[in-house]
Amino acid sequence: MASITIEKRARKNGDYSYRCTVRIKKNGEIIHRESKTFSKKELARTWGKATSNRLEENGALFKEKTVPLGALLDLYFNDHDLWSNTGRTKQYVIKMLIDCDIAKVMSNELRTSDLIEHCKNRRSAGAGPATIYHDIAYLRSVMKRADPVWNISANYKVFEDAVPVLIEMGLVGKSQKRTRRPTEDELDRLKNGLKERMAYRLNGKTRIPFLDILDFSILTCMRIGEVCKLRWDDLNTDHKTILVRDRKDPRKKEGNHMIVPLLAGSFDIVERQPNDGDLIFPYNSRSVTAGFQRVRNALGIEDLRYHDLRREGASRLFEKGYSIEEVAQVTGHRNLNILWQVYTQLFPHKLHDKFKE
Image 1 (cartoon, rainbow, N blue to C red):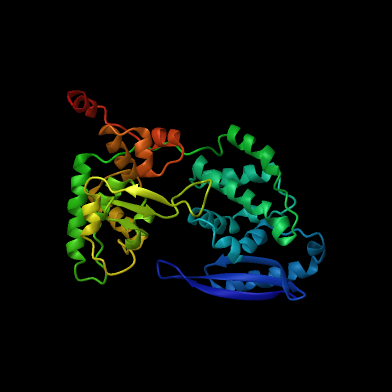
Image 2: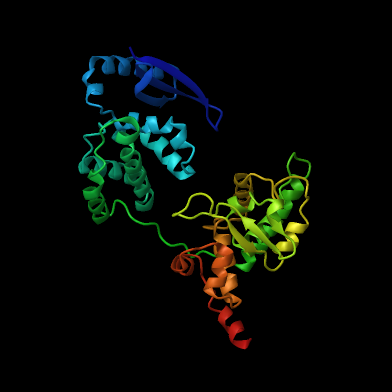
């Protein structure tokens, strides 16, 4: 017999949502799970009863070892060994897909037409080709694990034929290369705004040194997540270097440690931080970017992301005459083509200064 549980969850706006989960166990193991989120508890309870009745009437469903895609995504969501190693973007996409119409399709019956319909629905909702491509890529990733992990039949090979069609139709595609760099005026305004924010929050529980972190991010070309994980134990004061642990690398998720030089004033920024814990910048990276975004929005600075500071730092190094191999030692890029094409955007007028030198 199917069991029904309803979980009450708080939303950011203060309202509540109700997630109903229907499970079927066999010999003490969960062989099927479906869940859906509703704005009202009564709606969740009604859906749970209807789903339970449908599943119990369709006993053949489990003999065939096939489930709705929503149930498959739910299994992935509830598997700690898989979910804990999944990035934030993929987690967000999987949670979103559970509530999409494509989640109703049986795992072994997915067709190209189903994927086309999903992509068109997402496009009509305002999603771009690069965003929709994440849906397709992450759904395929989950379906490939269906048989080896849960003994569930899933037609993941449909993506081999479907993706070229989706690309041809313009429904999915690669993201546009960003070339945005902050101007000197924008940086000055940002620093003044962040300085005011620091003074305003002086009496708060946590005072984030936004100015130091912003300058440090540019000088070191580090991602904000890397900055907020730097450890005092990894600082080499004699060589003015620091060990950056687990740098992002598509070919190696963990153990990708790298010694990075602390150029210009970045070493001085580190030295003036209070050494009263394990981390040099013991702050939540999301809080840092949130403060940056609030100041940016208040100043009316458009289309500037915190990650663009990494491009700004790399471009400055190139403008100062560093070779691409030397810049890669700072940024951590293994692929020099990506470093040159994506993370550099030289200001043409700076070439006059280079010529004079």
